[in-house]
Image (cartoon, rainbow, N blue to C red; front, side):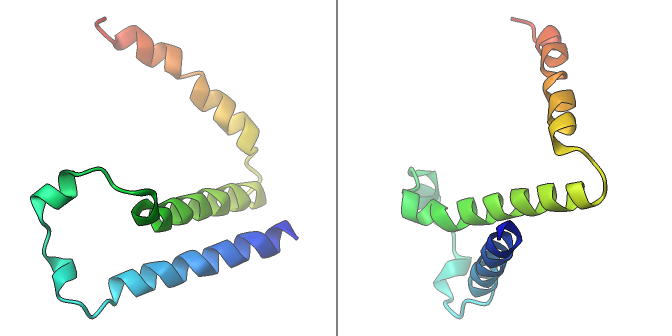
Length: 90
């Protein structure tokens, strides 16, 4: 069931990415600096959040298929944080 959900999210995300890339509107190519600086609403950020979550879930799925323990990998990544903290000057 989980594979079916992940596959559905991946297909939906792929559809959103293709729709964004192949948009026929010419105004999409022009970036207004004032509009870019304003805070983005949740509905504008939702496709990017869905794609990010889908890619993260897909990465976890393939890591487990390759024999890499995702929990152990995250524990090793979290162990690096004190090292980074030691390099900070404040």
